[in-house]
Image (cartoon, rainbow, N blue to C red; front, side, top):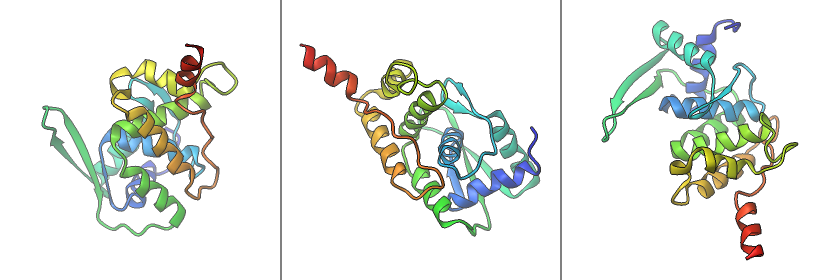
Length: 189
């Protein structure tokens, strides 16, 4: 990790999210999308099972928790899994656009946020639907069939498009509709 004072960068994420952020998945996806929107470029992301993931971000948050600016409380889900709640005592955001982005994104369902971040990653990094053939939403659906079910993929696209409407230093890329492949298939039948 080449960042100077990475714990402060991690703490600022919680600060801009209003002093609380629930879940490691949400932390990773909100940060990835915020970087894509040009708010910073502090962490490198790679594709993992849950979509874009930064080992440096995970370590930076561990340092922030160990040094004390961020408090982490682990809780148990109804189904037996565990998740973290990150809080920061003093929360005075400095950039209103960044704060609006983080606060909007943190309020999104974690699965829908994961799907949106995954589609964006596939479009930007793997170039699916960009310079390579395919549709990043359809590829997301192939990689995450259970999470994409029950209308979540469309809701994720709606969430992504809502984030695109917020003021950001760099506009989030416009992704093809998740329905393009479906519409073409129905036209052929």
